[in-house]
Image (cartoon, rainbow, N blue to C red; front, side):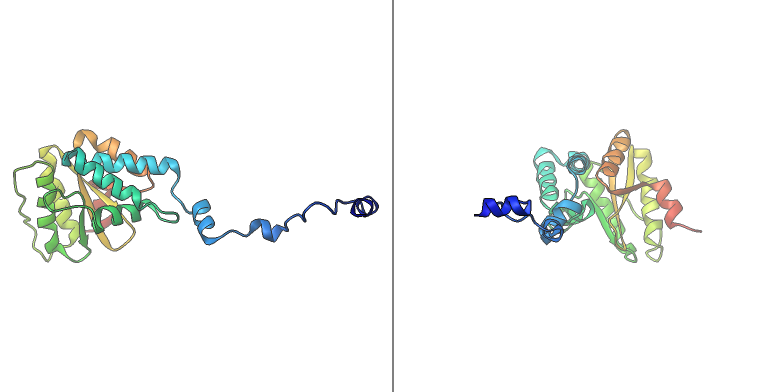
Length: 203
């Protein structure tokens, strides 16, 4: 009977009804996050490379631990910046093996001890003493530290994680280009000190 009606009406009544456009386009929140707001495979590989490069001085075990921690925070809808913040800053780095300096925009007094943690992790025996007054701005203090490490074969790189704090890490001068490229490929905003100075210091 259905086949006869199908012939008369010109369509197959035995087949399941085709989904409407609205039904086809309805996605769950999780599907939307995965489809449109997830870090790409290429970005993820670059982020893994970036974290491996900036933690190499900590030894294989600690470098792998932090890299795994960061990548584990790349959930659907998250960004590379969030993965860095959650994987390194919130529950990752440890005293004696500091990777990323994090200072509130007005907490200049926090710069010196964290800078020296970075030096210790990089194997630099010298201690940096901030000459700027603690009333100086955080950018001024960071630039002073940047000038101090430069003759020692290191460079200070600045990450913008999208909030009002300042983030910085040390890199060997001969690894600078590779680290910057990996960061940019991962979707991170990274600056060398000259660019950082132009953006943040206006006197």
